[in-house]
Image 1 (cartoon, rainbow, N blue to C red):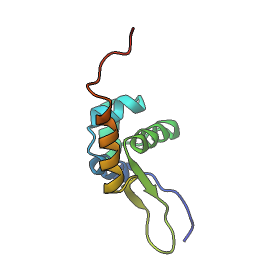
Image 2: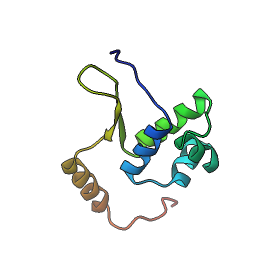
Image 3: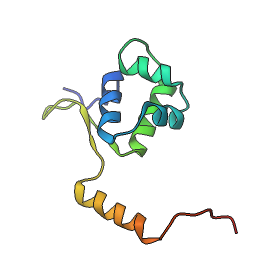
Image 4: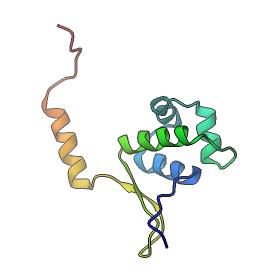
Length: 104
């Protein structure tokens, strides 16, 4: 098996479910239509390489990590951070107090 990076609709759908982000949020961040993302995830339509790249980047920003297809196991997706890191990040985010506008 090669160390090839695979990215397809079902993998995008799995990643989105894993990081618990809506179609609307991913589509907005990736600058694609919600209907295009849904059709891609369900295998009903193909996207351009650029659209696929932007969707993948958006999912990675939301916390997905894509795994290469290799001899030890197939391709897939997992969370970028383990539970301990997620708790630490949440704690850091809460340390600054209530969020407010930055305008002075």
